[in-house]
Length: 311
Image (cartoon, rainbow, N blue to C red; front, top):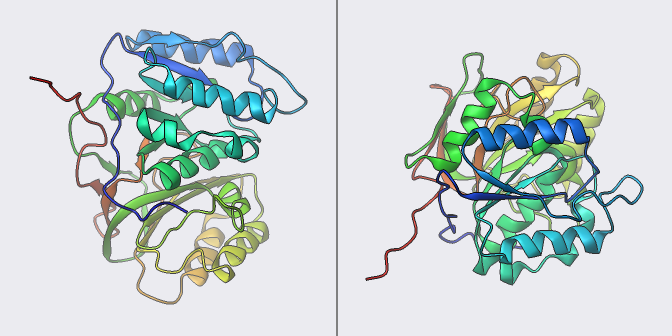
């Protein structure tokens, strides 16, 4: 568990010409989709560093657990790398968590972006290091991503302002407002972390959830397991992203409302993150205010910082 949720560590802000290193913490990636994503990063003005051993392949994994974990450690420790973007999700991120050097990661904080299965990596780094991480596109999805998705990624990693996340088609499931650090990501991945040394704490947090390809009864089962395990105790607010190919939206909303029937937890659905048409880049581990009535998630400070000036 994280050493209390103290003041978060904000990574350095990216500037044109900075270098983004690519890691593959989970499954192998499609070369064509990967190339398209790299081209988008370069068009944004960033340098891209692709490790020679990135394309390792071991069954349905991008190399051994030790290999994938060492790659993450290496890029965090490398002073030539300014930020880290994951190649794709799939499966495997949780398998390599025991190979991570969290002390070194804490000493070399950098922007880390991904989603889906990468939720395990984002969550563990936040919990163990207190580092703000970013739920957003991976390289393999960035090339074909919507303009809104690409613009959100660039803006989030470069802007010096308090982000406000909203959506044109959001739905207020339960009114009210709450303030706390934002945490969460892919539901199945978070559920599978229950009972492990990397199980996150959502107490006092704004919990964001998204999913794809899961039937309603499976979503109910995962949420029920998390509720019975105490994982959802003390959640301050709930934000739902895309539940793509998961059945009727109203049915999913009903499941969430039943799971959180006790307490006055504000609930907002339909924000543009996850496996949907848009996948906005959202900071994790940073305090924000969820206003379910205004349908906004407003951060209290910029998610990145400028280098300290040494006199």
